[in-house]
Image 1 (cartoon, one colour):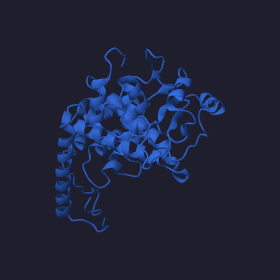
Image 2 (cartoon, rainbow over the protein chains, first blue to last red; image 1 turned 90 degrees about the vertical axis):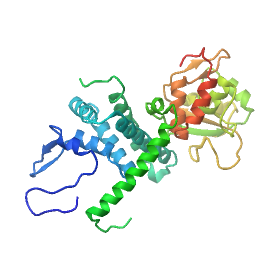
Image 3 (tube, rainbow over the protein chains, first blue to last red; image 1 turned 30 degrees about the horizontal axis):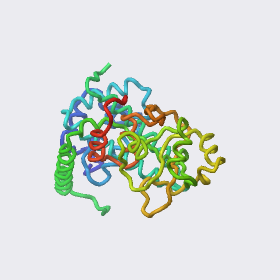
Image 4 (cartoon, chains in turn red, brown; image 1 turned 135 degrees about the vertical axis):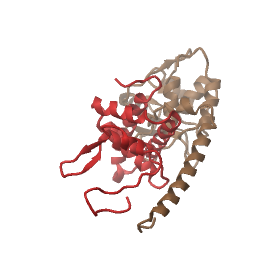
Length: 145
Length: 185
């Protein structure tokens, strides 16, 4: 985002092909305090597909935690599957590989965690659960319900 | 990282740099023929804090392993040695899943020393005496070998390796090549 303010609409700049998510029906929702925001599923999809070296793993971890948080919400999972299916398979494979690598990085942190960072364990398990759900969702042959 | 706001042109240049790095990374991953298969492996944390502990072996490794036959489900290096005759770690430890009662029994019968939960590693940076590394109280699928030892099945071994050592396509390829075809996966 390069500028905030100056009218009702906030200008944003989107690099790459993430505009496909924004262009998809239902990818944004009206927020109670005015304006629109990405739906939870669209946010998870965007975070999985975002390309950036700095904080790239953080994007993937946020997505996996969001997926884990919504594991019992079938409409969220269907919507996430629909949005990710807008992208070709190479792109999804790379996103899954990045998510798996981020999960591995947190696993390493959890293994080395001391008493002060014991929260890592719980987070690592939630991230692993999110990755399991994502991989099942995007497994070959899996179609939207 | 600088907290200064970036111009559109600076953001674009940074994005192009990141895109190039991502392309290289993607190509490196895809250079391994098993990339697609391993993508679907969910890592399992064998050394999970709160679940894992390790204790010094007070008897030779073979005696401890035989004593725990039927109680332990071996994984990682120990499973690899039992299944294919070759391990992949330098440290001669025993690594497996155990019930807490069985770990206590092993301690009470003098097979192992006092379990400790800190400094856990399957790949120590310094030479240490052989240890029993146990993951406690989790129901794990197992395969019984003709010897009577129980090991995790291939799929679960791959999950444990990924969760403990990271993605190691070289190691997984070698292990898979030496994995007996008669064993259930």
